[in-house]
Length: 286
Image 1 (spheres, rainbow, N blue to C red):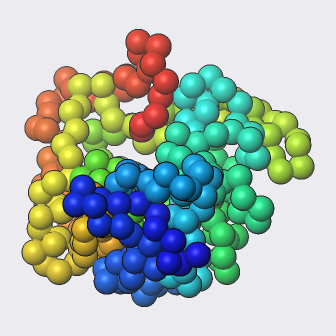
Image 2 (cartoon, rainbow, N blue to C red):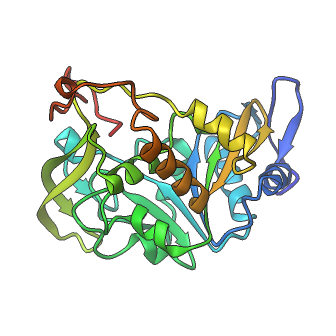
Image 3 (cartoon, one colour):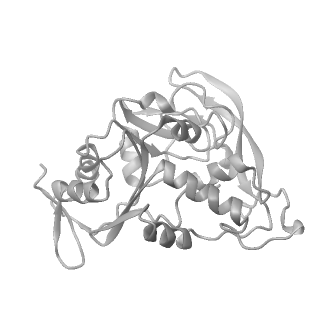
């Protein structure tokens, strides 16, 4: 199956599973024990001979072929933010087709986090299991476990590093930045055994008057420093950075310039007002 064409790019070049895996290796995605993967599967035009499930399976196989000990994917639902219960087995993720496809596979484990759940498969899949605390970005969260596990990397598999690096918010929480506050949400969690219980869960969200920046400047600087590895894949890009380099880069930028990731703000902007979903739209960000 590694030689089956999966998609073609704008120049009509076809990519097989083997090609995808080889590309991932060029940026060092295989050189870690734990790989945390953000995804966007718009690499090109899928092979019309492949059904949707087969296409997603091919992309997943390219990741498995890296032979990394453990793969982690964000399976965020923001369930409580949307006034929904969180069912660890059945709540769909808003993180894209590939992750939703992987979530439903046999043997994949998922955290009991009604806001920012994670799924994992592999040797250290228990990193998402057990008590993950009541704060999605706190000291018992999966992000915190990832920070303390050693030899982990982040892979942006078609996803845009400058827009979708949720780990920044974990570091912001650890630093207790003034432009974010802890917001509580209530709801019910349904666990793997079907038990239902009430829960209060927190997220570190932006203050009402604060405007965020993207991470374009940090990306440029990290590439120049040789800490962020990138490669073209189809019509898109893959990006890899180690957890250690990511944490240090975020930490150092915030502590040296509080406006690294937000526009300049005043005290009047620091209202504890939750602005997502105000107009009835579904909450998909924190």
